[in-house]
Image (cartoon, rainbow over all chains, first blue to last red; front, side, top):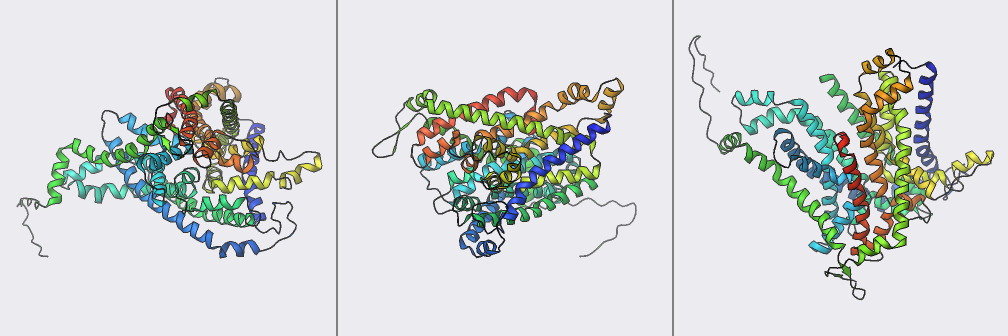
Length: 266
Length: 307
C-alpha cells in the first residue's frame, strides 16, 4: 500500500502516543516508590529510601514470593506434562471428538477467571469436601496453564512434521529412543517458551487464586492486594511493583532469545 | 569394546535387538496406534474432565440448591429460587447491564487503539523498529496485573499526576469510578488485543495491498475492502480476550471503581462474606451464558483458531 508521508507520520505519532500512555503509569509507580507521601501525591513532596528498606525487610513479602514461586513451579510442571501429551494426541492422531478436546483445552482461558475460580471453589468445598490449601491453588493454576504449553508445542509439532521420526524408526530406533533422541531435542525450546509463559501466568494470577487459596496461603498477588489499601503499606506495594517490572525483563529477554534462535534456524 | 573390521563385499547380518522391556513395549506401541492415543489422552482428559468440566457442571447444579438460613449449610433440595432471583432482581439486572456496558466499551476502545499500532508495526515500520515495538508492546504484558491496576490508581488519584497535568487547563481527573474502570481495563487487555491483530496483519501479503493500490484503491479503500476482511478473524480473537476478561473482572473495579460493582463483585461477596454459594453460582451463570453466546456467534468466523 502506498501511504502518503502524512499518513505514515500520523500512524507513527499515534503509535508513539499509545506507547507513551502505556509506560507513563509504570513510571509514576517508580517515582512514587521513592516518595515521602503515603497518599500517591503528585508531584512527590520529597524523596526517601525508607520504603525500599522496609520492603526488603518485610517478612510477609518474602514469604509471599516464596509461596508464589512454589505454586508457579508446581503448576508449570503439571502443565508441561499434560500440555505436551494433549498436543501429541491432537496433532498426530485424528479421532472422534478431536474438536471438542481442543475446545476443552482453551476453555479455562476463554472463560473469565472468576468462573474457573468459583467452579473450583464450589467443587473443592461443597462437593469433594477438600479444604482449600496450597494444593487446590496449584490444581487450579495448572488447569489454565495447560493451554500456553499446548499452543507452543502443537505449533512446533505442526512445523516439525514426522519425516525425521519416521527416518529414526526406519533405522531401527524404538518409540522411546526416537522420542529421546529425535523428538524431544526439537521440542525443547517450545517447551521452554510454553513453560515460561505458564510460570508467568501462574505467578501473576489473582482472581482464581483468591477463590482457591486456603486462609493461610498468601501468594504475592494476594499480599499486594491485601496491602494496597493500607496507607502505611501502600508505598511498599509500589516498591514490589517496581521490582516485579524489573524482574520481568528476564523472561522477556529469554523469550526474545528463544524466538531469535528459532528464526535463524528455520 | 572390540572393533572387528569387515572385509569389503562381505555383509554381516544386523544383530537382532535385545528383548528388553522397553523394546517390547516400544514394539507393541508402534503397532497399536489406538493404545498410543489412549495413553496420550488419558491423563490430560482425566484432569480437564474431572477437575474442570465436572466442576463447571456442578456449578450449574449448585445454582439449583439453596442455603439453610440458620445453619449456613448448603441444602441439596432442588429449587429455582436463585435463578428466578438473579433473572428478576433489579440489582442483578442493573449490574449485568453495567458489566456488559463496561466490557463492550473496553473492547471497542482496545480494537480502536490496537488497529493503528498493529498496522504500523506490521506494514509500515522497518524490521528493526518492528522488533523494538513488539518488545515494547509485550513488556507490560509481563508486568503484573495488580501492578498495572495500582499504577492507574496512582495516576487517577485526586492528588495524582493526571490532576496535576490537566488542572492548569481547567480539567479534572475523573477520579475513581466507572470511567476509571473502563480506562484501566482497556489498558490491561490492550496487549492481548494487539498481538492477534498484529499476527493477522503479518499474514496479509504485501502484494495484495500493492495490487489494490495499482487498481486505484486509496489507502482507506484498501484498508476497508482488502485488509479488514482478511484480518477480521484476528480482530474477533482479540475481542474474545478483552470481552471475556472484562466480564469476569472484579479486582480492577475494587481498586479504581469507587463504590461501583460488577458481576464479579456480586459473586465474590456471595462466596465469601454472605456465604451463599448457590446464589453465587446462579450469578456466575450470567457471564457463562454471555460468553458461550459470544463464542457461538463468532465460531463461524474462525476466530477460535487465532487465539
